[in-house]
Image (cartoon, rainbow over all chains, first blue to last red; front, side):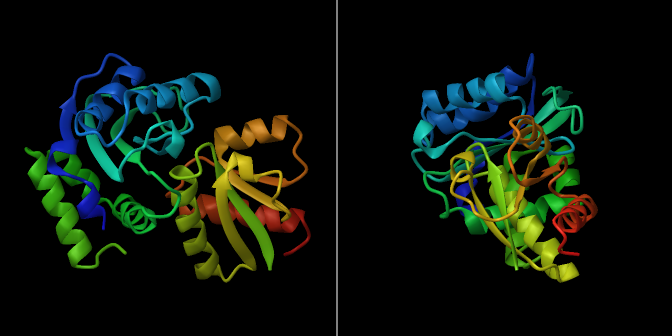
Amino acid sequence: MIEKIVQEDLIKLNIKANDWKDAVRKSAQPLVDDNYITENYVSEIINSVNEYGPYFVIAPHVALAHAPSESGAEKLAMGISTLEPAIKFNNADNDPVSYVFTLSAPDSDSHLKAMQELVGLLSGSEFYKVLDEAQSSGEILQFIKDSVLNNKVS
Amino acid sequence: MVKALVACRAGVGSSLMLKIKLNEVISEHDLPVQVEHSSLDGLPSFDGPIVVSLSDVADELKEQGIKKEVVGIKNILDKDEIYTKLSAALKNIGEE
């Protein structure tokens, strides 16, 4: 499932960002370009952080950038970005962030399986190594496909 | 069974991932907890005793004086953290 919602052109390696807002915008841009999310959705992610704090830094170095579906999640998709250098998101426990997963979920349950697979990927150490060392988006997507097909994550 | 609500701002991302990990911990340790998830909008209609959330949201709920046992998780992938805090919450409500 996850290999179907992460497209190769939604994966961006070694993004240089000025700050966390820039990191969120640059990570989300490929999803805006392909009409998975609206510009408003991206603004909503940034506004909610301004209002509520960095609530989507879910684990050390990992951010799951997302906003409520009605803010402009048009089609189910996930973007993956690596940040080089890592950027502070003002989350004392999990800073700095190196990996941004931008989620577009138009409803509350169609992405359940994909999220389960993402949790599986993030729970091991191999995925991070691949994210750090990959030379192309294709390598990351291939690793995800292999992991899912071999039932390493479920 | 004790009902626990996993809540996040949007109800589609972090709370879903946290629910997945929470369920792993619950089944590994055979805890008497049944997990639901929603956005924070689902909170007023939730009738169980425990609310689980990412720590910054949890801190805010505590500040608001919500009458639930609030569990704040810093690293949603860390099963030890989840287990320790969930067990403490169960103890606080007298279930373990």
